[in-house]
Amino acid sequence: MKRTITLVCLLALASWIATAAVQFLLQPASSFLDALIFRVPINALIGRVVTLMLVEFAVLVASGNSRFQELAIKRLTEADRKYSSLLQSLPVGVYRVAADGRILEANDPFAKILGFHDGADLKAAFLNLNQLCTNRADREKQLEKLKEGPAFAEFELRRVDERTVWVRDYPRATLNADGSISFVDGVCVEMHGIDGIMRDIAEHRKLQSMKEHFIVSVTHELRTPLVSIKGYVDHIVAKEPDLSKSVKAQIEVVRRNADRLLQLTNDLLNLEETETGHLDFKVRPIALREAIGECIEEVEPLVEEKGLQLKLEIPENLSKVSADPLRFTEILVNILENAIKFTPGHGEIMIRAEEGDSATTVSVTDTGIGIDPKDLNRVFEPFAVIRKPTYFKGTGLGLSLAKKLAEAQGGRVWASSVGKGRGSTFYFALPKKEEKWLMALG
Image (tube, rainbow, N blue to C red; front, top):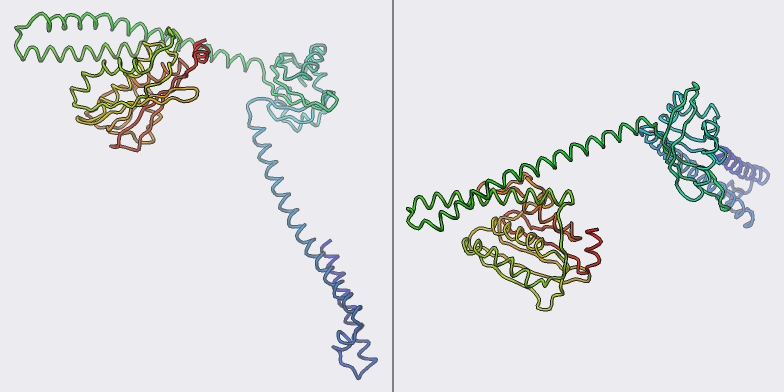
């Protein structure tokens, strides 16, 4: 097309020049330019110029369209290649059939289910999926169900080698305006493949159950002697005032470590119970200011021991929240103990409460060692390996338990920090309406 238009343009220009040359020869008194331009009637000159411009414009348009078409074809070819590659790499059979069952498209895994080498061989066979079903009546019922929505099915197909195979099919129909089926797209897998996946899931659940039973058993076995050790140590400290300072100091070390181990076993047990759904929640409306005050009283000895300054910003007219009082205390105390642990002596801890439309948020801000931004999401993982000064010890179970307890009651927990050495803030939000809590707790 482009070459044809260019040729027409050249012929028109040559005709114009030839006409001027003839006129110049017939009227030698005039110059060639007079014959070519100056003595040509104005309407004829304009017509010739416009004709040449139109022809040239047509050449440019044809050239541009050609380049655009080449680029469009290239892009479509690349998209088709990517689509085909994705379709063929799937581990399941994918197909499209017409309303009458004719197989229009299929990837290689689907072709192999039917005994073909690849999708091209299957399409070349012009097979009908409805006719490959050994039970035609069930197939017809499934097609009727597809008019209402996706209809999972299991059925037997006859392969090209006359053997049969059971498959699970996950089809979806595209309907015409009158409600009839236009075509059906489906994902198909052999039954033995699905059975293998189900066995893997069952084995995983069995191992998970064994792990849960082991943790619960071990923590219970550890907890019993620890409670006994702590009881005897507390008794010695309280009933034996004549002990020497060195003996008392040694017994105090034993008591602190017994407390740590007992807290660790309790946290492990509670964490496991929240994950398995065995932890009971007794939800009722609680006054937030009073609940926060009780938590502060519990950690006050730790605050005084490190010489920390504890500040409060809690509005007087806070609405009640629906929560389990015991679990609320566990959440806030764990967050406060974490702030106390990682805040150097004479630092500051601020507790704030803010009421929103649907939830009340409590935050604990400290002036401690801070958190690297990349570790913010990992601080709630039990036993997470996060780099910090070696003199700060911790398993992360307290924060992990706080997060699980809040989420189990329809709330959430998160953290923020500007960076290392610049303190951090831990938040937990609790829904205000009891209906949401009940929904979360089932």
